[in-house]
Image 1 (cartoon, rainbow, N blue to C red):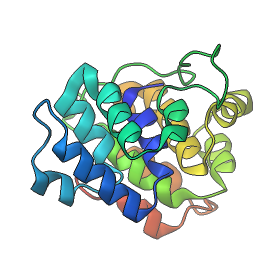
Image 2 (spheres, rainbow, N blue to C red):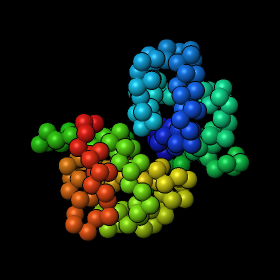
Image 3 (spheres, rainbow, N blue to C red):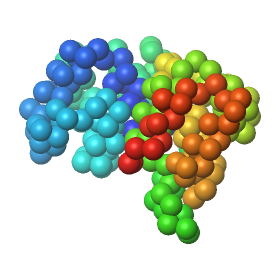
Length: 200
């Protein structure tokens, strides 16, 4: 599982007060954290990408340090990709997960960003399996794996969307995803699809 998805999964478990405390403790941490103004303005969906970009390979360790200070030790299992209480299970990749595809296609169109997918995932809801099979062309066994590896609906939806993005590569543009999910019989709320119209 990519660092951004692990951080996203852990942050989903924090209520608004805990998220503010997380940002404050992160700002007070050593190692040149992002500026306070940047942290205050960052949404729950923005934070994983911001931290991964700012801390590079140390993002998971920094987030784990802050969660220990809160204390929110129960979230460390999610952060490290293990089931609660299962010390033998190591981090697992989301099926089909690879590195980020190129930012633009040959036609100059941008590939859908992780940030856009995170925002869409929060609004997609419980019909995510139907969307994955009928509109994104994913297989049921892939979605079974996603459901097994991720505890919350939001992280499952995000992992499913990442499966599609990684499979499609440069063809995984925001406009293509918008066309797929806005078909006449699609259960996706048009307001949720607006997330794909925003800049990444």
